[in-house]
Length: 237
Length: 203
Image (cartoon, rainbow over all chains, first blue to last red; front, side, top):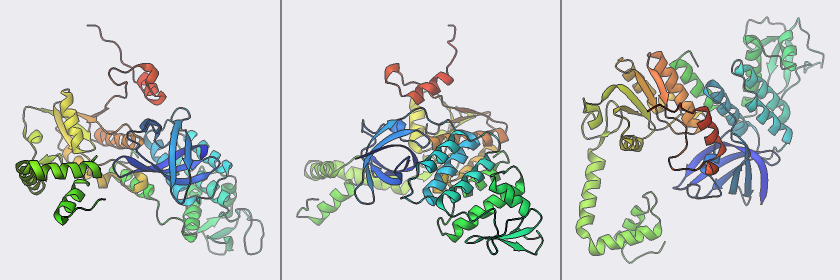
């Protein structure tokens, strides 16, 4: 039997009374489990089975699908609403699709938890981008933001670079006429997670998307599609 | 599952087992009861089931089950035509009606937002709802989605949509169940109930 603090990333109904839960825990990482008889169980209170609710999860692991035995609340739910809630779903999807099941570094869990608690009302987009870059860094997928990969020379603010997802940045004689070419100054700022301008955000997104694509980690991020639909509905999103 | 002498009997038990909250034991009992003692009821049931499945359609306006193009609720002109209540599924309309506290119109989403599953506004009929709101007859939208994070996300989206058409959005209150004692209330519910407390009215 395992016991750990964690969160539910996603849930779906299974048959009449059970649910399949994707959990993310501090020291055991991510796993998928079944909570049997959730609708009538006293050990699995429905109020607790929600994303963004800090939990103490008890489960046993046999084969691919864990059996979730008991779930207790470990404090108040993280209060997210409106756009911040949408950002929360997005963060959950990233963990679900990008972090491998055997990745169980508590520091990564802290990053996840910290990002959810600190989601600001404004500028939450830069928070998401910096979360993505940190995740890549954690998983060892992030190429150097300080050195050019061909000659291992430091990236210079006045030069232009091209990004190759598996290798990193390479100096380019092209000007920034193409969206795949980035100014050295921008790259240096990104290495300090300084993400307060649109070009920085664009670079961060470009790096994340192309690395994820090259690692074929996730075919598509569904939350982004939903977010686009919402923006079409009203500019307020 | 136990196999019986007749294939028809086995098929019936198997079909009954598909129903919600009917397990193998109940399915077996129902099948034997119907076939042995209540053939009339069984025939009646099969006819009604067939009629409903073949004859029912979805209301053009609110998406509730209907016999005709529009459902009985949408045809009723005595209702409060300035209010629209948004629910997730047809059974929620039944619950709202039983409350006897709401007499306006409805719209059924047939689901809720679920960003991780890629279920966005287009998948839950929001374009149809928007065309309804654009007609300009409503002054209040009562959001009655689930008290879950997905329900919350859906409620937020609906509130943005309502404001776009100058409709005032409201949401069912988070609160304590009638007849409950504080000791047994979970902390999230209690916390929301405190934040959403009401002034006590003078009689």
